Length: 175
Length: 375
Image (cartoon, rainbow over all chains, first blue to last red; front, side):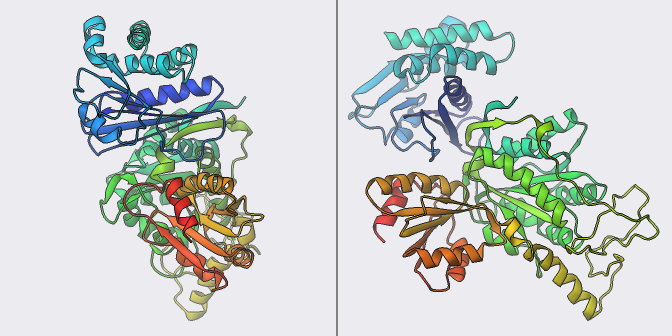
């Protein structure tokens, strides 16, 4: 079982990223649950999307022992990485996150939004870049399934740019 | 071919309604039930149905009562504040015997409370929210697939007994996404309403069959009758005599009570040799499965009786459970609601312990395990 929390600010596309990740897991023939919590705001406000992937039935739908926390804002690190064990993966977008908790040993400093804006012209694809980095790091789902799941969810005409965003994320995590 | 999808509980509820043959939805979107309205707005035109966003919650249920009288299967969806507003019409549909289904995706209350956070605080409101003596059928799904199947079941029961059926989801189940296999809808048996067997001139709108349920004629098909919230006799016209009053109220209750074994639904999980029984429902049952698995690894004999139909309450089954186990624990996301019913049914044969949580967070499996270990 792998438990992942994708956190940031409302509007960064993290709920969608969680859904895509869970759908990719189903394509791999695994079980998956995605859930989220957010405030009443449509934009802004701390937002988290949680995904659990397992070979067996998953009972409790919320993450209780995270293996990975993605944090796309400083508020998200502060709020949602508290229960991450020392050897758990913290993945931060260095565009927005400046401080990480000292006890964490396994931190990926990735310039997600900065890089995607420079290379693809829009911050909009940051969630897909993050997915690439998560898949490359955790192997939670196959690259083939995440690609299929992304293409199934994104608007027509944006397939190529989303594929490039995914590849960018995979490359970022490999560094 | 069955389709494998990742759906939210709310989506599965809406799809279940489409599969059951619903062709009319009226409502007023409210978090955390909004997706049900959103999906019905998209799906109903695709199947020749109608969706109306009404001016408020009361109008939403009023419109479905009217549409049901024309023979349509109908749905409205809401959450706490809207559920409060709908109570008047729930009573009306009960006494006028109009089949309707209401999905209530529970959030923290009272009042506006916490719109995006889960709770199970409307369980007693489901039972007694509308005034006066009345029967109630309420179902609580604990998974996304069950949101689909129980929604279809809600229509079967609503049409069979001619009364409102409440689908009591909570934010955990309504908003979580998990795997569901959805069959082709033409393979699903659509609940059928019992129609009149005599012509319009002989038809008495509220003359029951031996099952206590009167056949129902669709408005607009030549059958004319009076529909009222007043106590009425078999013609449908008001009759306030003590005899007519007692007869109607007795029949409304007995049509449900006599069939309670066919309505009652529950699941037993690792209960065979259990010394501790967890009685719970909905999203909290998900914590219980996990806590029970953890406890069993430590050799603690605990199991779950999961309420699927919460109303009418399965008193007989809980009484039997109370004879078998040493203690009953009732975890729920409220200050203590269904625990009172469990106590009543257990009749002092065994201690019944509430585990109430009302801080806007679900009960985690670890919390429940710790509670069980500290008994």
